[in-house]
Length: 168
Image (cartoon, rainbow, N blue to C red):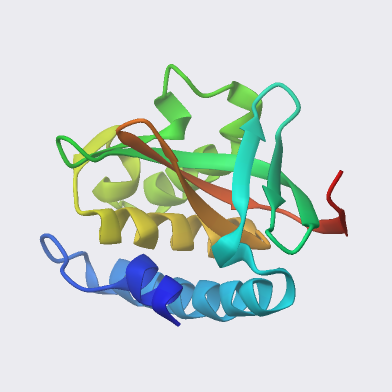
């Protein structure tokens, strides 16, 4: 359960519109349930990760010798030094093929008038970055989500159907 307290812990920035807040809360609950299953099934919380943007696969390797591979989508990145979120739909380091779900969130934000989803760069907390990723998980019908460190940035991703095998 410690993994999910770290993922979905406390404080939040300015209040979201009520309808968006309700969607986010529903998404966070749904993602937590799915991630609990992944963690209990193949030990996601203990796994090392890698992402090859050319192929688009997120690969997890567990200490128990399990490998989990899933197609990935990058939702955004969080800069731990300045506390900013940059959506993948307009991120110079994200391959366009891996930003399709982020673009769906952009369209969802435009459709509903949610500025938070249509503003390229946001000053938010890491918890809010998780909330945005959970929303993408729900809206785009993903199979899970992950946050991987890359230097001073955290890459927030969703992933599709997981294929399990013995690690090579």
